[in-house]
Length: 349
Ligand SMILES: NC(=O)C1=CN([C@@H]2O[C@H](COP(=O)(O)OP(=O)(O)OC[C@H]3O[C@@H](n4cnc5c(N)ncnc54)[C@H](OP(=O)(O)O)[C@@H]3O)[C@@H](O)[C@H]2O)C=CC1
Ligand SMILES: CC(=O)N[C@@H](CCC(=O)OP(=O)(O)O)C(=O)O
Image (tube, rainbow, N blue to C red; front, side):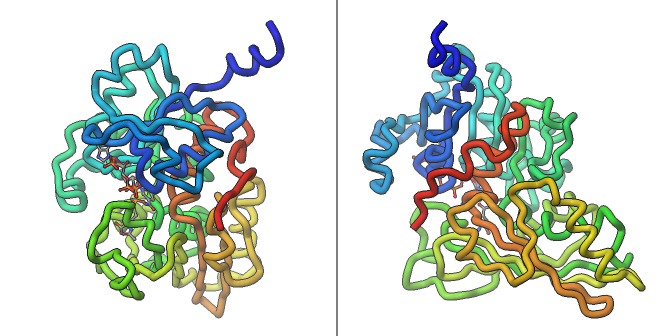
């Protein structure tokens, strides 16, 4: 067997569902350049006609040559003979219906939606507006926060990739929670600003150019609050904001430390958590969304005064908060380099 044939034969064959959307488009871009995965098909909703990816996203002309086809459940027939891995960038309810079918068809599934993130099915009606139909998968699907996932969890076939605001918030807070550095009574206060791509590509008045300024929303009621609380095992106050920029999230988090926690202990908690994690950068200056937009990194910074600690986290919502984290999880699952396919060829302008 020639070298090129043998290297092609070990590649995982990937499909993307939701490829016409913002996070799906990032999956298509990243998978097209991934050394160990081959993107074999990309799908949008059933109502569409097949269209070149580069006509949906003209900046990819002469870079990504692929047809985005309408998804029909008939694709499930013999799918395992054509693909190994599915990345879903779909609305939550569509993912909830499709992911179990894809797993049963024999594929490994990385789901970017919130459909499998919450362990408690009773939370779905309140925070997602529907009754969960597949609670068994809520139990088995690992929560896909890549820096904190365990080897045992990586054995599973369905991954609930962490949400965008929760990725920034939990990466900032978990080192302190794990080292028990927070005051018992401290309720972390998370204020986070997202760019408009966080709301998806579909047109809506509230995200149109002339409407977006800078405003808070979702007070106490956003579906990411229970997700962050589940990840940390403690209550938080979470207030998202929509800002007038395209992509990125900046989360500013205020906590109260336990008595007598030193700066050295706080520094050590972050160093210990992330010293071997290539996609978390610990900064000695305040992070800027401009420095992470178009990258798979989470930038973290903290400042302490007595028992008060402010942590700032910045990510690209579509990358570390979605597509890049899904690929990072696949890299970990298949024991490739954690950053494989994530750092080269960044076309963001
Ligand atoms: N945007 C972000 O920052 C983040 C998004 N996510 C999650 O990723 C998912 C996708 O988000 P986003 O990219 O913003 O969404 P978009 O609205 O930009 O794209 C959604 C995609 O899903 C397709 N789709 C919709 N319904 C169906 C269906 N029933 N069957 C098959 N395909 C369907 C759409 O196809 P068509 O265009 O043909 O309608 C489109 O391609 C969501 O669950 C979101 O919560 C996660 C983290 C961050
Ligand atoms: C700006 C904006 O509207 N953001 C979305 C969250 C982004 C997203 O799609 O959420 P997941 O990460 O859970 O998938 C919102 O507030 O609902």
